[in-house]
Image 1 (cartoon, rainbow, N blue to C red):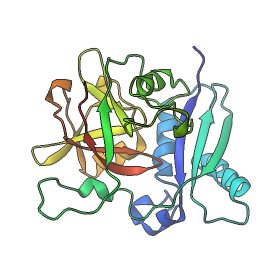
Image 2 (image 1 turned 120 degrees about the horizontal axis):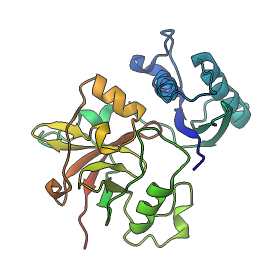
Image 3 (image 1 turned 90 degrees about the vertical axis):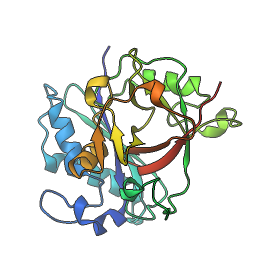
Length: 256
């Protein structure tokens, strides 16, 4: 199957106020962890892609200018596709602005008496069957994830939510492999709260090597451990995260 590498990047001026998000030149960046996105593209060792950080940033800058025009402060979700021939395609769409540091929910502890208001809290279901064919690189082959979303009563990513019955639809669905090891959700990496810390599945189980996942590991916000499906309980706290939404808290809802 022919496919391309895919990246979803958040553009948001609020990100320029967080020093942890500075670019490799040490200057504030409005792109969420763009240097991590660059290293993820490079790690794929795409045969025809002669990629530099400046080229990646230039592609992002151009699409922001094209979409925002005079409204340079409008936050955007940038969708970057890198073909096997080394060509970039970029599109962008408006998204709601950040209200706080997008990594802040990773500091939440369900054990604490004082609870920080990180609403809305997502409702997360578990898929009804294992998923195979996933890779550590994000690609344009979304079929395994869209199939999982369909089984949970959710539309494919990018399809308006009003196009399906929203009665009992969750915000996301947990995927797992044939061995019963949790991998990720349909759009995020995931961590569970266990013994006073957040734990996330290792790449060896078949999850995507997300840029925010990497940052959270580097900063000891999360820790790698395999998570068996049979250890998940109803109402478990989870932390979900990706390069657009940042971190979000959720609760598992088991269903028949």
